[in-house]
Length: 399
Image (cartoon, rainbow, N blue to C red; front, side):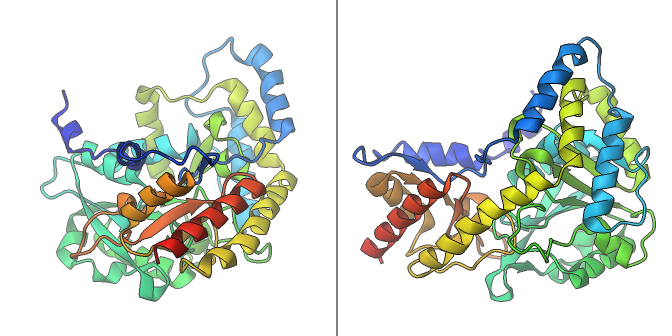
């Protein structure tokens, strides 16, 4: 067995299931699960229809690892429209992937040289655990940068010691952030680009929540647009990851992209050729249809916006939480220990939320996820409203 497997920590939902086994959910109330960030709005029919049409003739041939040119072009055109990019070469700067999760992990295996003494990966904290797993299985150590509640959950990358940056090969960032919903502004990107130039590390920008936001006039800034604004032609040492899971309510399609530095894209394609991660031709056809349509994305955002505008203020009356800039989570402060509160909520109200401490690691003497819960407003409006009312009731009892 690969000895590095022993260093992996259980996934947050595995830990939550183990903890939840110690309590009996209230059987008098229907179960409401707000713990998992899985989109539950309906997948647009035209995507399903495109998948069905393509399946009739699209399963008889092996797919290309690089993906069909039509899909790469559709992704490149969407990225240019969405982020105001002057140009993006579909043949060399875009690669289809099987959802952002597998690509975020596989990319780490591509760019990390675990044979280098002290090889390190810098991650935000709390974080998506795939970043940690990718680093560990590539033979690197992780360095966590805590979200600062007093700075609106910003990560102060300037506080990372010089000797850590000198060993760093890869930096994962998530904007919009999971779990806080914060969007990184231009000045923070400028500082990260300068650090990358100085120390030579690669930046992997996880942008899977980029299309869930609440003000149509203020779409979240993406890393490629930030690089273009700084005159960084060719996006040196930068790649971004996105998917149709949240944007198009199609998590089961397993379709996304990686885009950016063409040298990194070329190396990643080489890795993926051996990794066996080519996208089905039928999924590719459905993906082309999804990337070319924006109306369903606007409609999807409106559903989320309505829920957040109604429910975030209601929850904040009892559990302090800010309206996020983007993504579909409320990051709420708990009365006391977050795990204890989550278990009480499950036992008394049959509502599941994710304790924030399970998303974080102890760093600089603190786990920045402790004392908070992540609430995913992914269910229909009625379930979300009922869930929030039950959370409020539980919080009041234990204030």
